[in-house]
Amino acid sequence: MDIKHLGRPVQFGGEKEFNLKSLQGGEGHLQYTQQPADWNPGLLQNVTQDMLKPGVKVGGAVSWADLNDKGKAQYALAYKAKNNKFPVIRTTPNPDYSEIAWEKNGWIEVVSKPFDIEGIQKFLDNYGWGHIHTSFMRGAPKAEQQQMLSWVQNANMYTFLNSLENRSFAVNGDEGWRFCIVGLSIPTVQHLQRYEKIFGGENLQATAFAKHTLLNVRGNGKQYGDPNRIGMEARGGSQDEKLRMLNSLLGGLQGNGWGAHPMAPGDSAFRLPDVRETGIKSPRYGHYQVKRLPQDFKNLMSAHVEAHPEGGVTQADVQRAFDFVNRAQFFPNEVAARLQSFDQRACVPLLNFEALPWLSDAEKARAVEARSWFVGEMSELSKQNLTPRDAAIKSAQLMTDWAKHAKLADAFGKWLDGPNPQKYLH
Image (cartoon, rainbow, N blue to C red; front, side):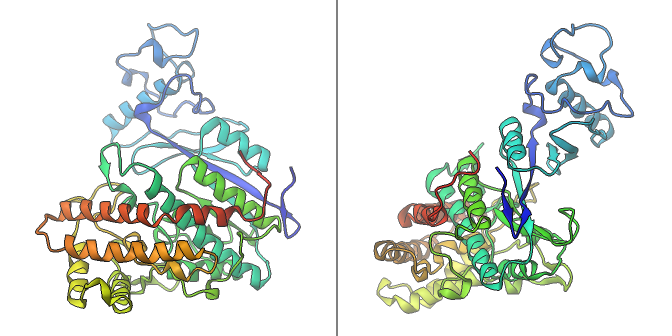
């Protein structure tokens, strides 16, 4: 299948992380790797049969080539324990990935070369759905650029809402992780301003602020091999959520429309959270990673209370609720890949979804009712004398319950599907 945008091929890339502690022998994900330069087989004290490739027997010295994925993972862990760093692992020529990288959490990642759509489908089938880059050429008309911005907004919102509505509150015992995992937040007003610059021709260096959303826009003039090639990176979401986003994205690039009702950010009063007060790192690199509750939480709640006084919540209640969520902490100390405090995700239950013109009247009414419920419940919760940890977990639970009351994920998903029946990826 030949997919083009503005007359140039659309390209893809994949990145997939693997936990060393759970890699199994038969997966073959690390088969295209070279023996580390400072190979020390003595680090493998207890080699078992499930660490070796078929036909290799336990006993005697082993080479890197003798080890399966589990054996190589165990070697890397032993090397780290001895040297306080992971070994340098390079790849051999292969059709699947160009490099091996180590993540800060100690997981190993395979990074693909650029693919066409058949190549990325094969990579996803073989290695799984990790981060997926879709790159294309700049130069779309201004009106289409604006539609792309709204598409990015709505794709992120769909993925976040769907996870709250339909997946577990706790993952591996980590409660409320969707509100504190560093890399999987939602965009803000400032993100859309940044993405608009990239669509319009500016090159901007990726930063933690810029890339740590469920789906982001990248373009530094170097990353995709052409100064005018930019990309969207789908970082978060389940396989089904990513599949829905990517098929919608490809429909837009193919000229089939950016969503069911293509729109520009200025076409409605709906807006994302504003984090302007979180500080600027530099004119070149932009905002810092958001690590605290935005003032917009209070602003949005205050606006709702003013518009809906029948709920009985006062502006004093709003201030107390803001202070309560602001002091909440998921962890007493810093934890890798997690935020201690709430960021812009906490503002989602307070957004004015009813301003979206493509929602039905019933969906708009439900959005307002759910927000009123959330404001009232948050006001009551903030009266409790909870520890910062309990305040964080109970607040995150309330935000999750709001999503189940609002039931907006399906509406956003259907908007993404639009009129495009083509399924480019499966």
